[in-house]
Structure formats: structure tokens, C-alpha cells
Amino acid sequence: MKRRATAALAMTMFLAACGSLAPVTTARNVPFAGAPNGVAVRDADGAIFVTDDKANAIVMSSQIGSEDAPAFSLYARLPGAEGERTGLSQIAFAPNGHLLVERFGFGKASAVFDVAPSGQVALASDTNAARRRLGLLVLDGGTFLSSWFVKEGDAPASGGVSIITRGTTPRQAVEHDIVTGLSKPVGLAIAGDMLYISDQTANRIYKVDLQSARAASAPVPASDVFATVDAPDLMAASPNGTLYTKCGAHAVCSFSKRGRPTVIASDLKAPRGVAVDVARKRLIVVDRASAPDQPGALRVLPIK
Image (cartoon, rainbow, N blue to C red):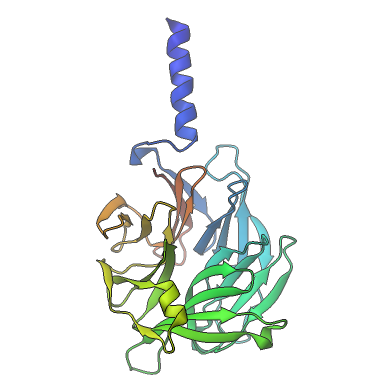
């Protein structure tokens, strides 16, 4: 009888470790000493990569959430813009294993950088440096989507989504707008044929047919509202079409294919980036500290 109980306990622990269905109370909170913002997961081994605004760098951990996990280590330090505050936005993997990461730029120095597996950093694009860049989606090795907004003085912010095609040098990158009519677009996600865009100021998530937008002779307006949500941020999508993003000041939600929200955590300080780890059935959420002198964290949440 004792052996059966032990075996049952071992199986329960195994299933939980694999990310099977589990209550939210099994979530892990992983301290983060810097100022985290964007996050990405490497599918092959589940390694987590995070942009740290405090260090202006990408840091990584290969075993996040494990009791014996090593501390986050420096993966690559990004070049700063002289005289400007540091700020890194979304981070995403390219098919060749490189990481692409955006510099927000504060209206003067936005850029996209390419980080090789060796940690070597190269400028991928600095076109339209006045655009404040937030969301990033890699379509292939030479093409990616960027969400951006511009703001001058007291005028309301206005933004859109563009497609950037890389040339042989950063100066040859071409940026072409495909979606306009947004206020402060932040997160980008693709599910099926649809591009989803979170507009933080409008409190909405819009959906746009990506292929139609790419083929259109002029940028298409964002008008098809997928969901209404309070202050959404960076987004991620799972293969089944579920979207994940910040919803309200302290929560993160999942959204069904019909745009129906479900709160999956509501006790975060300041949620930012999210990343879906499909193989391990977990969602990684950046929880930025609510005050500069406080540490941030990453929340690991089990998902279906």
C-alpha cells in the first residue's frame, strides 16, 4: 500500500513538472534583480531569455522554476543611445536561432538588433528612429513586424504596424506600414491567418487578416475589434489560437478564439511581456516591480 501511495505521489509530481493541468496555486514566482520587460522561450530546451532595462541587456536562464536553477546570466549587452534612457521592448527568435530585440528609443533612437547564438550583437534596422517600438514578430529570417507609435508634445499618440525587410546591411532595411489608425499599439501575435494587435490606449485588441494587409496597396485601418480589455500589453499566442496578455493593472488573461477573456493570475505587480512554452505547457509572465527600488519577477503559470 505504501509503495502505491509513493508511486501515485511520484506520478502527480511528474505530471505537474510536465505542465499538465494544474491549479493556479502551483504557479512559481522567480525573483529577478533587474527591470524585466520582454521575454522569449527557446523551444529546443525551454531556456528563458529576458530583456533587462536596468542593464540594457538580454539575460537568460536554462532551468527557470527549478529549485536548483542557476541565476540569470548575461547573454548579450545591447548598445545604448548616447544621452538617452535605456529601454528594451519585445524579444523574439528567428528561424536561424538568432534573437531579435527592439530598442524603444523614446522618440529619438529606436532600433532593432540581431543577437547571434554566440552573443554577438549587430544592428538589424534603425529605420524611422523616431518611432517608439514595442511589439515584434519575426515572420522569417529577413522579415519582421514592428508595432510603433509616435507622440509630439501634448498631441495624442498615433501608431501602427509595419513590416521591415532586411537588406544586406542595416541601412538597406525597408519599412512598409501595413496597419494604421492605432493609438498606442503594443503587443503583436499571430494565430492562423490573423494578426492580433493590442492597443493599450484604446483598451482593445484588434484583429487583421495578415495576408490581405500585406497585399493591400495602402495600410489598412484597425477596425475589427477582437476583444475589449483594460490596458493590454505585449502578447503571445499558443498554437490553438489562445492569446495571452495583461488585463488590468495587476492581472494576465487568456483569450479564446472568440475573444472571451479568462483571468489566470490577478496578483501581479506590473505585468509586461508574456511567452508561451508549448512543449512544457507553461506561460512565462514578466512581472515588473511597481517601484524602481524593488526587484522584479517572472511568474511561471501552468496552461493547457
